[in-house]
Image (cartoon, rainbow, N blue to C red; front, side, top):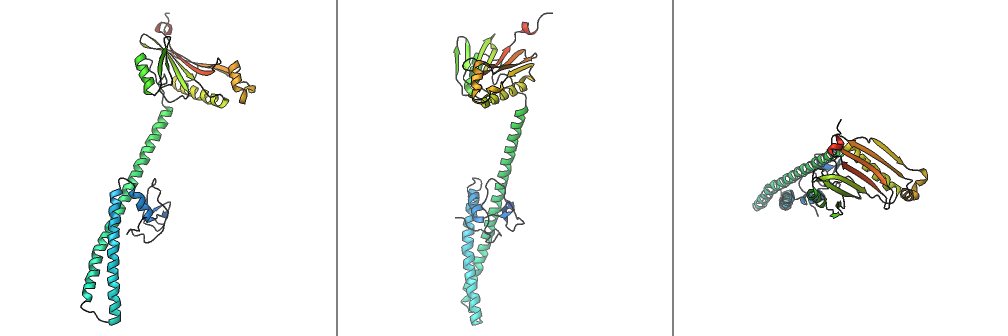
Length: 314
C-alpha cells in the first residue's frame, strides 16, 4: 500500500500511474504530478516508481523519511495542541510546559527537513522516470526509422546467400539462420532462406568455379488463393527492389478459379504465369514462375550467366 508523501499535492486522490508515459510536473489540473491532465494517485505513483530499478533505492528512502517525518510531525502537532489548550484553560504558562514546547520545536525541526527531503527524493525519481521514458521513445523512434529505411533500401540479391561464396560459406549462412543444410546429387539444399523477406520458402543451390552459379527459391504458399496472392505479391515486390521492373510479365487467373477451386486450377495449369528480369551489370538471369507440378509452388530462379554468354563477341 502506498503512503501519501509530502509533495505539495495534499490528500488529492488521483488516477493510477501509466508507467510507460512521462509524468507531468506542477500540472494546471491541480496535482503536482499528473498524466492525461489529471492528478496522479501519489501512493500508486510511488509504488510503481519503486519497481523501476533506477528508482528503487530512491523511493525506499523517500518512504522511510516520510514515515519518520510524519510521526515526528504528529508528535510535534500533539505537543503544540496540548500546550495551546492548557494556555487557553489556565491563561498562564507553567514551567513544566517548557519540556512540551521544546519537544514540539524539536519534532517540527526534524520532521520538516525529513518531509522536504522525501519530497525531493520523489522529484528526483520522477525526473529519472521521465528520462527513461524519453530514452525508450527515442530508441523506439530510431528502430522504427531503421525499419522504414530497410523497407525501401535496395535488397542484396540471393535472399541472404552471396553469389560470391562457395558451399562452406553458403552452408554457414543457411545454418546460422537456423535452417538445415543437405546435399543431394550435387545440389545443395537449405530448408529455408537466411533473409527475412519470404516465408514458407526453401532454397536449392548449384555451384561452379567455387561460387553459386544457380539459386532456386521454392516458395510453398498455403492451399488457398489468398495465401498464393500474398506470396506472389511479396515475392514480386522483393524482386522489383532487387532488379527493378520485370522485363516481361504474364500471369493467368481465370474467374472460375476463385475461392475453393483455386488449388485445382493451379494443379491442372489453368492458373499459370511467370515474370523475368535481366540484370546485365550483375550478369544474372532471373525468373519468377508458378510451377504446376505436384506439389505446386512459386519458384524464383536466379542464374549466374557465364561471362562468355553475357558478353558475346561482336
